[in-house]
Length: 125
Image (tube, rainbow, N blue to C red; front, side):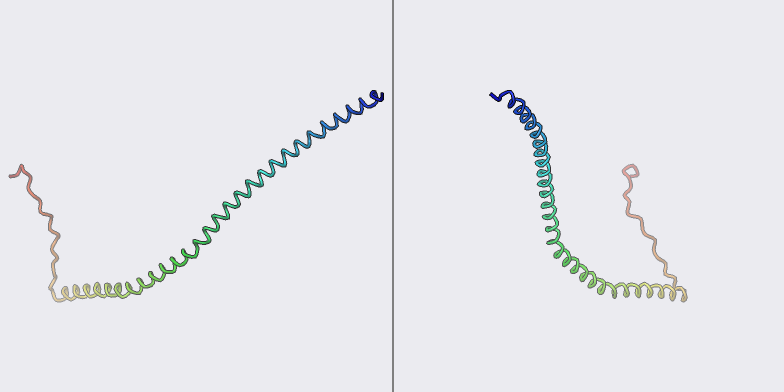
């Protein structure tokens, strides 16, 4: 009986429901996209944290290794220092001997390096 009054009201309500649903669907899609982006960022951060933890655990052994290497190098320097000094003294002594030989006229002549034994070619035989 009041159908002529209710029909336009029902149409208006139906149109309003359809218009109201479109923004909700769009908002839902945007919210899901944001959730996926946050999930992806969280996974990426977790991977970075794993890498940083691995680096942090390797710093200690690396530091110890460098410390041992430094100690070894210091020991080598202590050992090689006197050897280098002795080598300089030998060079100095050799120079003094050369000066003395020259002074006394003993000019020691050094042999020129002999060429390697070269076999004659088969054509020369």
